[in-house]
Image 1 (cartoon, rainbow, N blue to C red):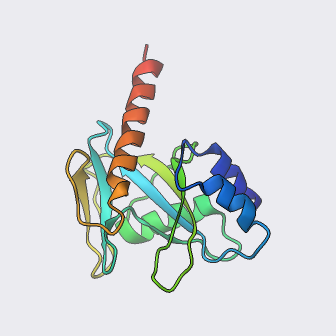
Image 2 (cartoon, helix red, strand yellow; image 1 turned 90 degrees about the vertical axis):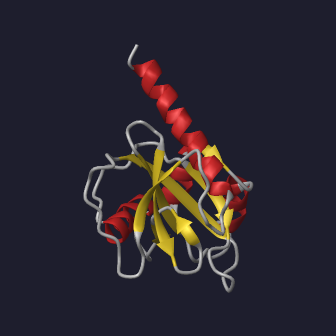
Length: 166
C-alpha cells in the first residue's frame, strides 16, 4: 500500500478526487487496485490501445495482484497484452477512481507512461487486438474521458522534452 500512496502522490494528473479517495480507502481493504500504461509514440501523436471485450479500446492494464507493486503490475500487463517490454517513465501519469466492472465498487487506478516506436512488433492476447490510435481522433471506449487525459499528458511530455532539449 505504501507504493500505491507514493505513486499516487507523484502522479502528474489527478482525476475524480483520487488522492482524497485513497486516503479514505486506506482505512478499509481496497480490492481490486488497477494499473495501466499510457504508451505514446516518440512524436506524442499516437497511443497504444488494446480492445477489451466489454470496455472497448483501452490502455493496456489490469488488476494489481496481491503483494505486487502497481508499477510492476503495469509493466506485466503491458507485456502480456501487447508483447511490449519497455521502461515506464519515472513519474506516474495519473491517478483516478473508477469502476472497471459493473459488479465492482469504485477503485483506484494508477496510470503509468511509456514511449515506444510504432514500428516495434506487437503481440496482443488472443481475442484482444492491439493497435495504435491517433490522439487527435476518438476511439470506442467506455471511458471516453481517457482520450483527452492521455492527449493532455502527451502534450505535457512533449513540452518537457522541448524544454529539456534547450
